[in-house]
Image (cartoon, rainbow, N blue to C red; front, side):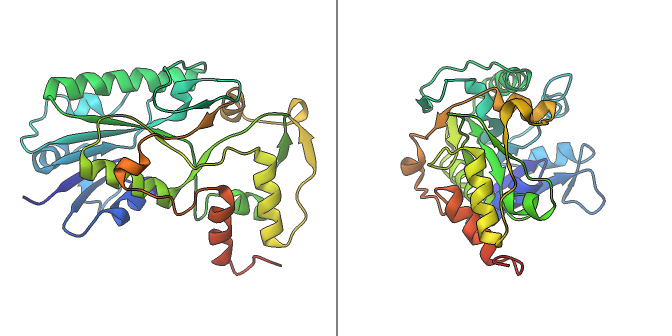
Length: 274
């Protein structure tokens, strides 16, 4: 039987996952836009009837996860695996300590608590169906069109400094390869999706400016930075992430740090290097 991935909320990361899947897979990507492979939610029943694998990229909304109410009672006779794209905010703040998938869930922000509730709901759905559930705890995603390079060129980059603060991130292509591998082996449980070098955001901005041949923006102490509420929630947590499972999945990151990732993006940018 052909493997059929139903990718719900099939956007930036979903397309990277589709690219990473081996030959022979078919992907049903949902969208509310005309011409999509699966119109959501009109075609949900047909897609669930065909899917062997399901991966939801849709974040929780004010009333919880918006996907489960649509699919909860739909027949899925061929479904063998479920994946939910969650976030590393489930782990909360560890004061910069290293953690892996054995760390307890301890969300400290509204964003993290919403993700935690959504994961519990997906666990209930998977348990009812007797299926494995991969909970992808994803770090900050960057890639073509969505990186520090783009922020600098658009004039919106800030080089915010805060002693000891670090973040992990993940190139969208590596995210796609990890998600595809998890689907292939039907991974079950939490899975951290991040690069190997948590780094201060100011270092990333400085490196991106150097690649573009531009001076970095001036440093701004965190206490003086103008940050959106969402950005403030990211800065409220400080942790160093690593996964215990990449070797078992057979995945070696193409972009293990921000330097490889940004350098690859800059090499395709005609404006890089001045």
